[in-house]
Length: 355
Image (cartoon, rainbow, N blue to C red; front, side, top):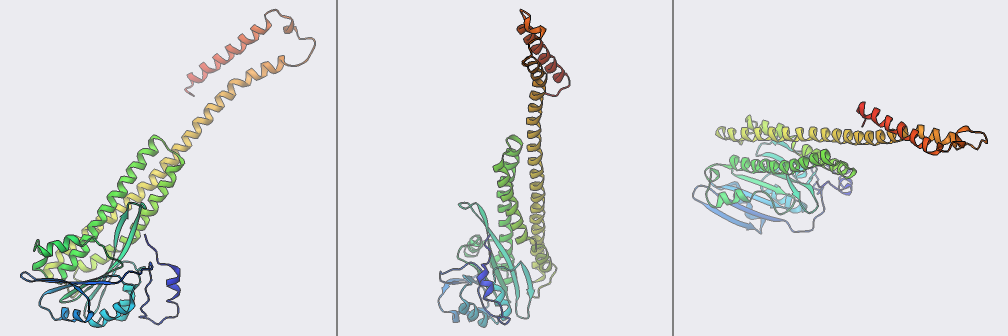
């Protein structure tokens, strides 16, 4: 999960509130702005080259979805903010990728921050991207850190007039964006769940030091996910109870569904964190048992050799007068005694179920 670099935070020190400074991973690619206007009968999709063309989105009779890929260019973010009368403090939050998910109600719009998660298969870790949504009466603006998202199914539904999105307003469009981000969390949870099950099997069958590192990595990823999605419960509850003036009453049921999904995601993450702790305890218990078995074997072996060491120690003394040394079969007698003692001790240990 990408974390804002310290140097970006330093640039904010001493700056007045509302200063537009990008806080996040440094990016050089150009900012891309697209616009999708639609209703039941109209569909207009285009790439925006002149930001001034966005001004019509406030007056259109259609639903306007403006998507911004890239929030590292302060001048572009500022111009979009001026066109849609977005407060400077909100623009500041949009450019700060370290914000936790939240929802704010403003006079002309509702402002939402949510985290979009992605599993990087090559680097085997979870990446987080901040998505900021500005919900107005006739427009929805989505700000993303980079190009590429989980919104393609929504775009396809709009283009093909599938589902309800072409028949609804901006509040339903905002819901679909939030909902598909939350639905993608379940994919992330499934990936982490599979990793957790595999680790559990390995811990039971063949625990080793490498598993402890894998388990620590998995717990770290789960904590990252929990940090990203835990505020969702408060955010979706606010929206589902009609906290926003820009939500129609009939749309609230969809936000309540998103609230239920957020609760389910959080519960799954919490249970996985607990399972991770249990597997760690199981690993430590197995390793302790393994060490105890080794110590038991070594103790038994040492116990077997104690009387034998005593016997050979006695007859290894360099005294001249030892009666047994003159016996013709003394050597074999001593061997016989040692074998009987060893066999007797092994029988006793087995009877006690010590090994």
